[in-house]
Image (cartoon, rainbow, N blue to C red; front, side, top):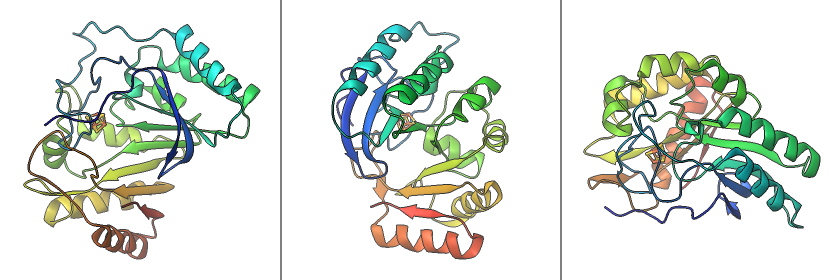
Length: 253
Ligand code: SF4
């Protein structure tokens, strides 16, 4: 199934994000294909072969090009509440991710101290201690967690084969300021019913993230057979997680 258009450059927006307010997007990834270590059933960019960086030659934008683009964008007179690493796949796959974040952090402090730093990540590289410590520099480190068990993780997120779900979860426990984003869906594969739902909710209760965003698909998805979860059901789930586990949950329809 075709997805939405890829971002054509490094900077996009500012856009009025339903989850982050007025956000300037930073895309660290190539502009001609999705570059991700997952191939989620619901991906808005459509299906694509997952990336194994040990075997694939990919040309990423240079550190210099990224920092110049960010600097130029921050100097324009306009309101920016959030600087958000997201874009055409998984931002932490850029081989110079750590250096780039430090550079953007410095530019933010110099030019836009009022803006917060955010990242939407699938958490596949949190097993690297350097990535964990760098994610600690973000005000809003949103880590994807759609499943609480390995079977649902495999079926829903379709990760690169070297990614181990249990290692990923263990590493999430080390992330200060942990925030979770979970996409809930129904259909042939679901995380809102039965054992899959119970495992996901129990894992959240154990991780106790500072904040949880739950939402569903509102765009074309990578694979057929995916059903979105309606606003009422999202609200019921948010209330249940808050009451039962004292978690801070925001539902977005
Ligand atoms: S992690 Fe994000 S970009 Fe990667 S496949 Fe999943 S939805 Fe798409």
